[in-house]
Image (cartoon, rainbow, N blue to C red):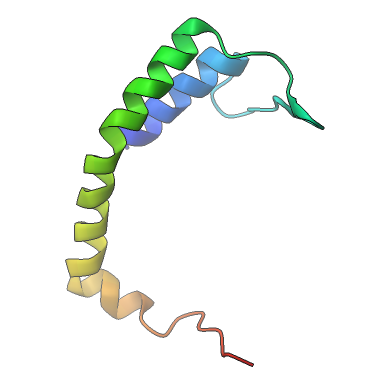
Length: 78
């Protein structure tokens, strides 16, 4: 939940909203990111790889999670 909150803070800085992030336009973004938004984004990008490793360990080693998702939504080669 903490990582989601950090992403919402970046969204809020970029477009003024936390959930309705409608900034994308054909050919790019509605406006440039503010210096504060870029600073928050850079900070989050530096921190996230360690958090992602924690997520991977949690999901890959959690027997209950693995038992629930193994063979769910498999797509054949055909």
